[in-house]
Image (cartoon, rainbow over all chains, first blue to last red; front, side, top):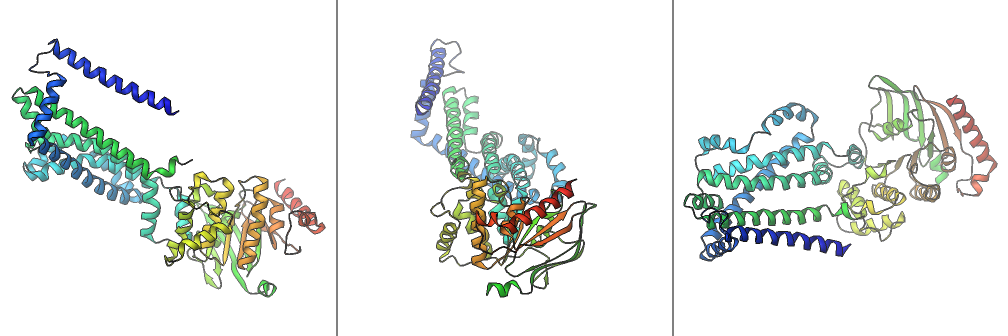
Length: 254
Length: 260
């Protein structure tokens, strides 16, 4: 069992190494012009240099901050609205169709509107992130709240739990699996929109870094930014995954 | 002392109750008085409204006409001193809370002081045979243990009435008999009044001081027998008592007649 897992981890690492090697091979043989594709060595060097001089590090942190703030904003709003809508059949009937209409709107399409309303500001970028990341959160929470075991509501009535206790002790923990799945989805959306927002509003961050590097044909810097984005996505997903399995430990404990 | 209570005024009273749900007449002209400390069992074929009757007593349903009263006050909503043991223990427990946490929910609902709560919970768990299992989650417990846990949570309410809806219906015979004796000793020990729904005639006679038989379409009281067996029940001797066998025959004939 354990050896199995080790083997699979080894296989995935091996594949990753092969990919890097292939990338190096392609760039060494100049199959693609180095103006467009730097080797992993050059990208790595550009990244380390950027991090050491501090500029890239600051931009990275700016992007992460934006992603997290936007995501937290979306999560709080999504859980709150989702709880309100999900726990009332009437609210679902009234608001549901409108939500379904707004949900498929690509968040990047909202950017011009956001710029018109908020200007090329930090709050505009945050607003766009929060708007885009809201939907997976909202829909997951609505689903979670509407799928609470009805028997538990009867138990709550028999025990005489107060209204707020029912929400915080029954509905919310019962919806937690859905909510966490929604948070995972919206985290990805938040990262995408943080980058898009930075590109469009030229706020300091990895998005604008990548954009400027591309315009100046500094492909190594561009790739350094992309690598950091990849790392950000990977690490945040891992952290959230750990958080999720800790929160839902009651599920696995058979 | 118990005998005196036994003869006392009704704790629960159902007076000329009719209930119609979604255009269907579920219960018709139900009259029932349950005395303090009495153990009343309800039997009947499925669809006869046994569970509905329990829900009326719990305050989860309101009658279409007639009155349900608890110590002379009308039941308009569930009360904390009336506890319900549901049949589907798997759904009635909070899977994300440990055994300890599930019992704690009742104390939280009562706003009981935090001090000493943990000890009380541990005592209740021990009382239902779950001592030392407090850290386990419901899905780590067997069916019988989950039902014990639900009973422990109900006892945390220190109820004066225990309403039980086929609580042992999904358990195997051995577990069932063990739990029957435990629930009897718990009910006798606390002096609580019990209303017990079951489809098992023998279980009804074994536990009950009185057995009510319902008939369906619409649900109505069709038979009522007093169980004149010694109050200390025993899985072997009680079930061999001629009176037990006579009652079993009487109820069996009743059910057979109802189903034909």
